[in-house]
Image (cartoon, rainbow, N blue to C red; front, top):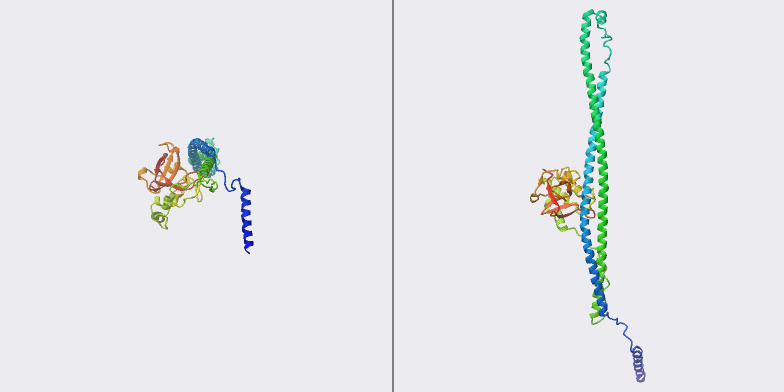
Length: 410
């Protein structure tokens, strides 16, 4: 037994010796070559190049974003131009309908006047020819006295006939005026419809350009940020491997994540939406002020998408949201910033109350430049539908293009 154990130990020793002889002079399999100083320097150089490229593009992106803001303002103006054209088209249609009804009434009056004229005989009266008064005097019944009576009667008939004919001529004039008004109203309606269609096309084009420009900017920025992030990670990984005392496992390359655009002051918006005054204003049989009701209702629409010319219930543009908010308070507004600006007295910014409409325009003092409107909710904040790609949200009113405010309820 002892000799057998000795033989086993000897075999193990011999095996280990053979293994050591076989691997002598070869590098360890687990040992990975460390990056050289030159490798690290190249990686750092690539980071600098990527950073310089991103810096250069960042300047271009800043200019593009400025153009994008201008484009957004132009789109808002086009949307409001479309809303204006729709309002004017509706007014022209109503005027045309009133003119058509007036023509119908004039036709009825003209027909009545013609019926009154029809019995009048143009050339003789009662069968007596007044071109021969002597014969009528001698040959007529009753002699001269009968003639005088007939003459008086005929004079009266002549006067009445003249008045009837004058009424007929007046009715013809009235009808002519009504027909002309109807034609003019119809033409105005046609022109208004054409303007609405043109404004709609302009708005669609402006909004499409805005969306495409935004998408290109976001894609380009994401691509450059990803390249820079990859270059930095590679340089840091090489640096760690070079300086690490032992081989360490590096983490996998993190993929770039898209930055989620959070709603500015979203928390404030939702706190406003759950405020006690909001619940009170929206309660059944509420006696709250109209401005509180309008502002409270607007807060219930937070998060709904913007869509140009949208007026609810699922999508809104700026003037569509304010129109519906004040409609909830019992006040009718047009779907257009132009007439909403004149829907009530203008109020100073430091005297704003909940529900006041806050307007934004490119040119101070020129209402034609107004391109946006929001509804004030207090604390320098408003609810508004900003632009395509965004949603109804709360935002500060303090912008460079702040134009003024209106209180529709008074």
